[in-house]
Length: 399
Image (cartoon, rainbow, N blue to C red; front, side, top):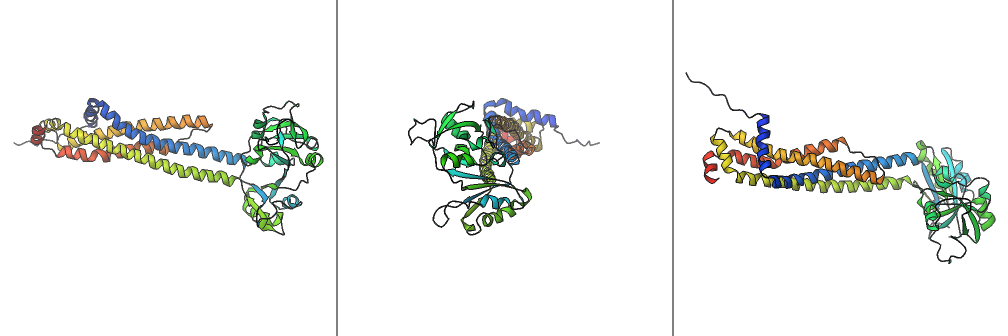
């Protein structure tokens, strides 16, 4: 009576064990191939993580500063007006319904020096701006030291320095005795500001009260710009009427913009660089896949005698194909896991240096490992098929 033999089976544990043989016997070659995959995956995970961390920091900054700040200023140059706003511009703008707060700034024709012995040409590029008391609240600014102008100090020769101006003047703290030579007058420094994210020009300025500018510097206080905080729901509507409100006779001479647009433009630029670096990561991943394919093809050629012996002992074509495909997948999987760990580590270190929260999207981690395995499967498919097609006699004869 004839008996039917059941087909041989290769269990998952057997596949893993036989697939690891080639890696264990060719450690340097396997390490270099896995390194190619690792670099590609690390690049992709790192880029996505840094992009997400940067974006999170930017969104937090926008939430803190608000997207409802609008700047109104006069145009300058041929055909753009005198470069000055009408005297009543700030009052007229404040009457717009959705406008919540306004603050006017007037540029003063004066220089600032550490003392009266500094040569005139060495002003350090510090400007003088006459401001009202609403400025700090309107810009959501903060003080590094001292106090901002109030109703009393704004009447007298006192000044608050922007962050850059204070650094250039060598003033890092306020003790009530710090003086600067401002417009041929001694002014007492009462405060130093932190950097303004939405108005960096003020970082390089000495701020004085409008009343002090008129009394001590004979300044006319015509506003050079007006800062406007509007109801967030009506920002676009307010921007549409600001020019005509600030200068009804010549609205075309008025420039209206939103400072946070610059931050959003920066994010758009970051997105472009993210796409670029993702492309470079994909190229590195492709190179890693080619490396795996190359290693597997060479491995098949070098191990023909092993393939022939296994076939002679009863291994089927499927068993041989699974062995070499499993080897490629194992190699890619090691590179993928290592790449994810490396990419996460790079993201963490850089984010901490920049003061960002570390955010690596889960899709970057899962996608990195999946991408590595897919690359390994594609790279190992041809060598596996080639190994499986070898006949035992041919493999043993040429091995």
